Image (tube, rainbow, N blue to C red; front, side):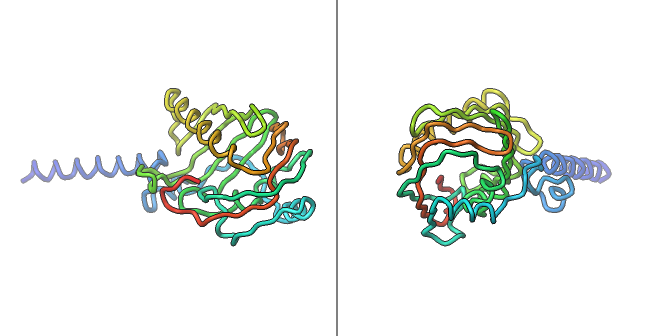
Length: 227
């Protein structure tokens, strides 16, 4: 009986350590512990606060129209685009973060932050991969660069990606980068009104020259569906 009790105690301690380790790593949400370790929300990357007033002014200046309810606009939603307008200016970081899509909430990805620098950017969000069949959820941070390759083409270079406190190794980082670029190649080509001449990441914002659609519709996000 004493041996059995000792075994039960050892297993209980190992289970507790495993649960604590998973919560600390930030790749699975563990009640109470994830919050204790700060892994129940995105990492703070020092991004500015969204500026809804600035975005409203930008929207009015360029005649942008949204044809769907605000709740529909998220990074997990299917969007529809039409019309176009010319743009040749630096869009401030706070205005970009106030757009409906980035500020919108979906269970899959939410609480998005982006910090722009000259030639690079850092993005952070809370991601739940459960709807896609992967039992992981937690804060994700990515350092990346982006370059225009054509009127409707870009190339993203992922410098580093962290899921919770776990850094994604080089081989998986390359696969993730290929997946992102393959996805963007398919999506950008279908955006009516898009014509990129320049897209440059700068300190505090993005300089864009070209045309963009001026009318946006969006479906409600669906679990397990890529936008």
